Structures are given as structure tokens and as C-alpha cells.
Length: 82
Image 1 (cartoon, rainbow, N blue to C red):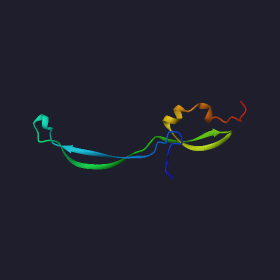
Image 2: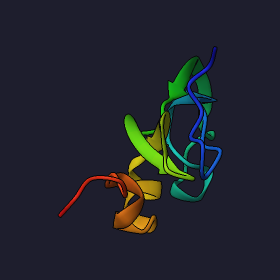
Image 3: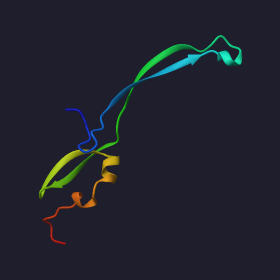
Image 4: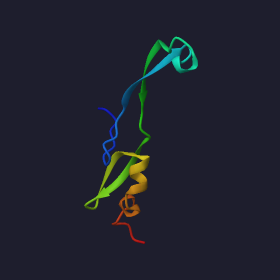
């Protein structure tokens, strides 16, 4: 099962990076030539957290951004006496 944020839906992204050689035409060169392409993956900052939903605990993957956005009371047991 892939790791996906339960709130924001963030997931692993696939991108490419390219390496170019040469000097730009505007600087008097013959232009930049692409000499290497590499695939890479960008992974979100996901963390496993316990969230209380309808008085029951649920362990879910949450991104760091979602943790900051959520109300702090969803991480606290509502049934526990203070």
C-alpha cells in the first residue's frame, strides 16, 4: 500500500533532472546541449500519527503540513480524564 497523506493526499512524485553542457548562444557559444537525464523521486514528509475520530483512535499517515493545519485536539484522547 503506498504512503499517502490522509488529509492532503500528498504522495511520491517522479521527476527528472537534466545536465547541460556548453555555453549559451547569447554569450557567443553554440548553445547548451543536454548530456544526461536522471529520474528521481520526491517523497513527502509523512509521519504515522494517531488521530481520534468519533471517539475512536485511527493510525494514519499525515504529512508535516497536514499536522500543522489540523486542530491539535484531534491528537488527544477525548475519553481520558483531565
